Length: 557
Image 1 (cartoon, rainbow, N blue to C red):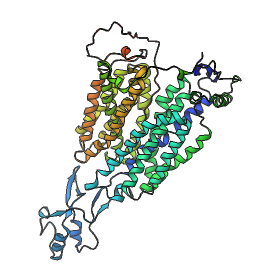
Image 2 (image 1 turned 135 degrees about the vertical axis):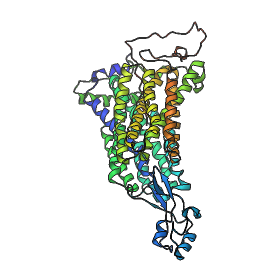
Image 3 (image 1 turned 30 degrees about the horizontal axis):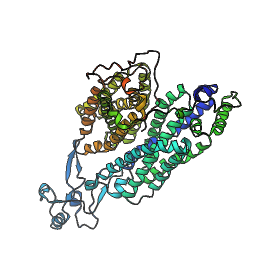
Image 4 (image 1 turned 45 degrees about the vertical axis):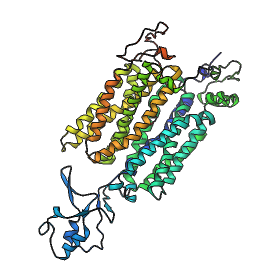
């Protein structure tokens, strides 16, 4: 009985067909990079202050002093949400009194921005914040919209796997790609915040669904050695490329509607990939559609310049993996023993903290000193070496120490940001980028590490629960950034402290590097520091330096 890998071995590992699939599927991830983080520019809040209507009978002196001043970052700026009571200063203006000389401004009564706001256009021509006045009492709406986008990602991650199992990887990939592109296009015509946010949730659902479908399609078509690189480097780096493209486009297009329209266009171009990306032969075989699977393999053989057997899939010979029924397991099995319970709890904390750090730092780039477009570009560029380093660490060094080192680096430098003098803001930006580097490397490694800790019987459930914790972390991340409105360093202190504590926690997880994957719960590696009763039936796992397990998981941003 031969399995799929043996039957299709004649295609080779890295021929023209595999290279085509690798790069086309990776390229389909690029729109996810700029759609997922487009909120950095779409929902940016420029400097603003209360509008004083032209009809107000004020002298030029009183008009220039109609808004109180606040000390912010060492300089005086107009108050964003208050102005002096208009009727009062109009009366002083009519009496010929001068502000500051005849009238003590600090004693004047203040009021809210009853006539709206004036927004600076030095950086942005318009954002959804300026269009719908999402400031002051309504400043919570912008982070809510981002959180609801990640709620859409959470929902999409639940349904995407089931849809691709039922309707096929290729169909779901292109339908959800159309969903992401289509709803992004409709967003351009949003008439209010509520409409924009509902559509943003649907974009989030489509984004994660096409990501998962592309990931699964690649891992099923590509050979074993290539799919490891695809899952750890291919999709991640092309996602980072999409993130890098975002500030470049936003630099030239400062209006949010036109920017969103420009970001939608590449999704339309991806429709051409339909004629180049095939359905997964593995999925077709699982559905009993052997003839269609053979057609795809014959085309692959032709592209690779190899001769394919006349009959590739012999139903009497091909090993049907679906016929091997395993004992069913429930999600409660993740809490069955003290050891797996601790692994589950620690994994949830680990994933949630890393997600908060990654998305928090990505969304916080508008608040850094310096040019927002350059800062956003640097935040994206720093991910590429982080992914490469993570891949090298996974190949050659122990998981536990690699994860902990990345987290200690990310958390440690974030805690140092508050100690940087205000005039050395470039140094603060460098520290934030170093923090992003460490957290991104940890994000890339955590999928492989977690999958190796769980046994085969509950591995998908274990990684799934951990991934759900990651989604919850991303939902919370906009509010970590929001705290920066009250204290500029508070987000860094919180994210840095949580990351350091998680790094310490990681040191108590078992080491899985070079160890065969466990198949049952009893075979799981033990959490450090816990005492266990001796189990004579426990199957001991021996270290095998020649066997380096590869888990087909990647960062689903």
